[in-house]
Image (cartoon, rainbow, N blue to C red):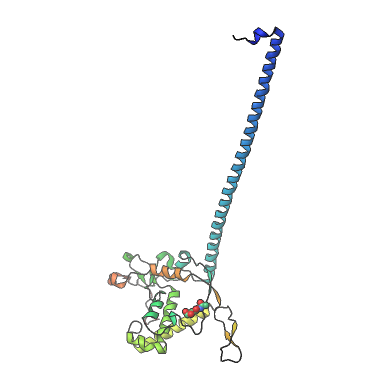
Length: 296
Ligand SMILES: *[C@@H]1O[C@H](CO)[C@@H](O)[C@H](O)[C@H]1NC(C)=O
């Protein structure tokens, strides 16, 4: 048997009970709502916190990226501005990153590295690997004027992409130094007997070539004299009663990345003469263009 509240309680008691139940339910609901609000607030706090944290991390990443990007741009702009200030314009200014870095020269007096060896295939290969015998490169027409090339200088025909025939000066300097090396009196006979250019010429022409090289290097060294200083160190051989001073040639230098220059020049070489139709390779001088009456 089932009794309802109405069966047990009188009218007023019933009202009291109903009010009591209603208020209890109200209190409970309010509790639940409060709880829900609390949880909602907590969830909101956690959510906000993690949101702020993630944003911070992303912001940091963005700042780091932008910063390094800006530094790179700034460095690039500085490098370009400095080069344009101190150097003749060259296609390499925009196309080859200088990558300035510090290098300690190896100024050893007694230990001969591969570039200092006596005449032979090994030392020749080492010098050749520096790019000293690369074929010329092409300077595109639109970059010729700012590169200091005159319109009547030598160009290749349009079928070979037009452009001016040129050499990277730094590699020419090394080419010259290599010829001086081959002309050292203890190497000279070896290379004359080998008869490879420029030693395939008569002795007089070789002499002219060598003194040309010597003087170009003089002018280059006087153009950018290194103003660093060479200190001295003490040395004392066992046989010596006291230490003696000796120049310390192992000094620090700020250098361009030579390898980038070399690979650029290697990539931009004109095709080998055997691969082109030489009759139509060079564009013949225009009327009025300067033609020297002797080798300048
Ligand atoms: C300098 O070069 C010589 C010859 O290659 C080598 O023996 C020597 O270890 C080098 N010195 C330094 C400090 O690298």
